[in-house]
Image (cartoon, rainbow, N blue to C red; front, side, top):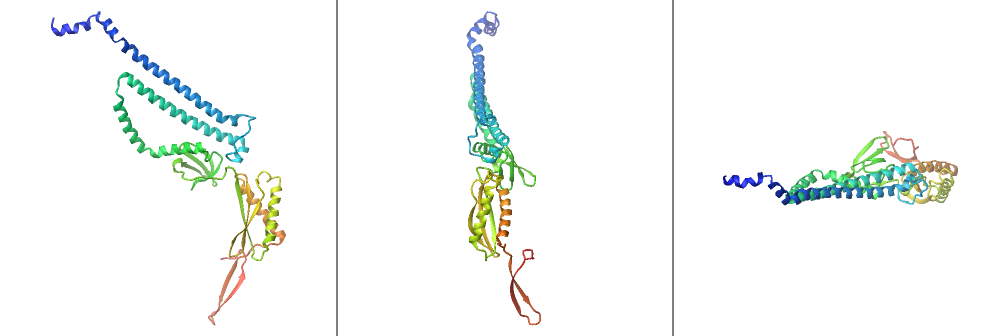
Length: 334
């Protein structure tokens, strides 16, 4: 028998198989068993984490779903708080979205950690893989940094409750009512019915007209010969009458105030009347105030100013010009 056959014969003989199995029993059974334990542990941790996230989301939704639960939070639009369906929709959207994002993050983290532990048990070196993954992740990060910025901005918008469904906002060019708030996009319906899709990463500033309270501002212009004390009294009486109106009792949060003379224009004096209102009600209150102020000024005999113009009249014979100052009607051409 040749030396090669002599050295290979123990592997071919049936008596050598039990010896090899005995020597490698730990590797044959131990590695799959440890991998199974890692998988089961990862699934268990993921289930516990998702259960905790679900409980947090349910706790956020509990005030909206409870029939007898009082609304404790004073932050947010008062109009939405009176409209239970819209307030619940806004709260549910924020809670569900944040819960979904947290669940996805937890799943990815646990999956990556479990895969790394499994590769370590198999005997694959993690150093080169981590280096390669770092290079690939860096390249993806540079290519998708705008997308990452959109998602991060969306998370901050929801966590900070900057605005929500039903709010009237000014996002720059997009001004209108918010119809949807997502992690990447915000949808705003403007006054003409157009639907704007704005990336959250491009939103640099937000003006929200639906939170806490608003203010109706009315500038009243009168002639220069008007008695200001009489005018102030008429405006105050008109404002108090509006506050006592049952239709506006819950809309007006404070008594109207006359702030005084706002400016001295060419045609007359401008006096400002303001009142604090519920969110999104400032425009309807301003229109009603404007109507009532007009009626009150007419009843008090206070005239509205007419534009004053200087008219030069030149004659062809003498070549001289004469100046005449006369009030021009409001409809006259300028």
